[in-house]
Length: 287
Image (cartoon, rainbow, N blue to C red; front, side, top):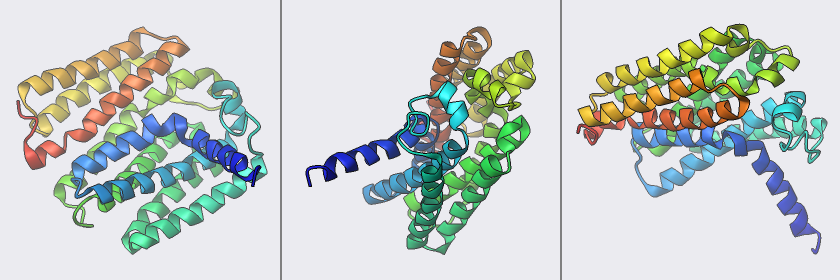
């Protein structure tokens, strides 16, 4: 017993380390999206949604990191594999265990929740096993599949009904297009590690264009979404200002540390994006 709890704590920390860096990237934006789009029905559904999102994020993280130890040794050496907390065969086994657990967990809610899990598994398989992570177009398509699968599943769990209505469907479609055109924001800080692995991300393929495009995309999406979701003038000014600020950071501040900071701001902007569909249901941001 004296060694049981330290071991459990050690393994729990290992699991958390798999997911910690993507909480801002996946867990929080998807949670905000589901709460706003469903909209949230009750506190128990919020907790169920949190658990479902985190388990599926863990599945993605283990899959990605079990194939990317060399990259993580450069970019994120504190992750479980480069830190020596788990071996690659153990991570691979854990990856497949997590797939089974996620499928079982989704089946507990009903067969309609198994489909998003299957979609997410296929996306991670294409991304990691078949190498689509190595090309910027394939990577962006996989990101669409990953985000929209999580959004659909979480929205079904958190809402009063399992049906995805017009507002939710529209929000998911817009989110997919937005992710495809802006998710290169996550790649700027990892250019050196990606180069050593032979990956061709958009910031590597077109360094100057990728920054100019990101600036334009963030401003363009901010203007379009302000109009589409009918938010009020003051909120629109603030939201467009936020998108412009983040875009200008990416364009003008180009060190690795600055790109990591910019990515934090990008995820804040993304979470605000995910709140906007709630205005179609409540009109609470029409000032």
